[in-house]
Length: 408
Image 1: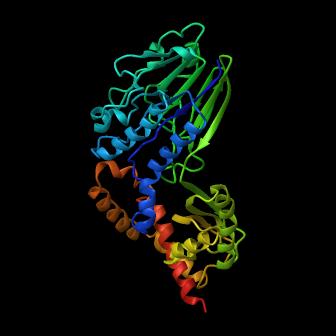
Image 2: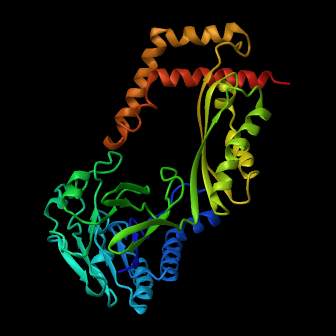
């Protein structure tokens, strides 16, 4: 039996995309609908591919909120599958477990949600396909669900559907399991969700993360979409990506060490940006620019209040639809270059930074700020509240302003 099926995960419908809402209302509106548009495109492409069925491996929605329009949108889109007699199977991930939408809507005929009480098997008799899965009854599942999945149906094509980190340490370790656990089940294909990056974990058996449909912040850069799996004579013949993202995110790290002045710097930013703009292939591109390297421009960059606007102008010269998320300064002073204003200013700043009384006053101010922070923010702000970092940035800011003031 030859057929194709859709494997998607982590739709996160209703999740707000982050980054530009306060700077441009038009861009913010486009970001708000990008996730829905991505899913709508996915359904259209899957129907054009004539898939036999669709799988969604968790996190259809995005948590405990009550926007019924998101549920109605999902219901309308999967009804397009139902009208073509394409069954849809999905399970709840950690975000769906909190979702009011997931619990309140009735799905169209032909849509099957896996149980959250125990792993179960759903069969598609005409294809001789057995699908095994279990959804999350609550957000934090720490049990290894894979160990309790049913035995494969002999002579059928067996698919395991699971929302799990599977050892990926960058993600919450929900439904923890190992590749070995999945192999021991004896299935032909594992349709995983939870990890937002596309990955073929294994080809024997096939263990696949399709990634999410739409990147939501600069932490989710690059191509996004789902996969279409082709099965021929009871074996996986191909796993092919289908790209759906309407907005793409990128991080451009610019080495500014070779730059002697501002024109050099912005030419370097443009050069680093162009490959990202070309890869976006006409999509809206949102980029974070990080400036790195030892440079005589270090102090001036920190002191330049217009740096963001100048950087945004540079990235927008690369394509029609490029927007700046932020510009980060990760440069260091070039010790071979003389300090602006001569050595006296630099030496005075270093002497002031070493003065015990000055350091004690700064430590006291840091203590006041730390005491006023909510508990959850103290660790996140640790780097910013480090006295050496504060002194270094203050020195660079002072030297930068001195340089800019001395410039003709």
